[in-house]
Image (cartoon, rainbow, N blue to C red; front, side, top):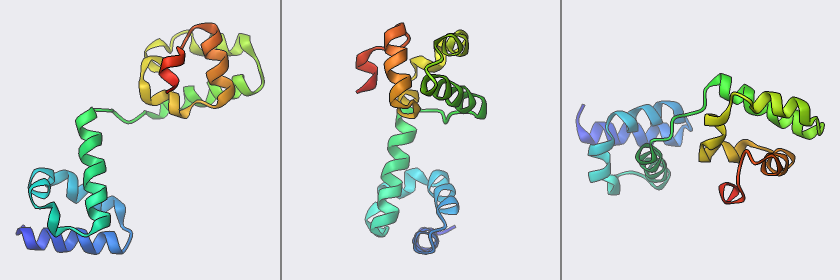
Length: 125
């Protein structure tokens, strides 16, 4: 695919708000697009920058099981069920060490997990 064709497809899919195909096109051609980002429209440029930063940080997306675990942690924390919370985080140490997981926790879960020593105050910032 030619560069002009690629740029036209990306710009059109961004205008149509077809972000899934835009993301796939950008990820497949990220090196070429980083060199020619001035040809992209502003929304496509922002998406390119976001994907570039996301790939540089090497954050793997959360799996369905991890999202379920976070959801159960939030539910136990909202009900202030400390026993259930302790049981749910028992085998989830690696999950709680990830920086991006803290963003998914509600305020109750953050406070209780900090009190239990599962996360630190520095993780929340």
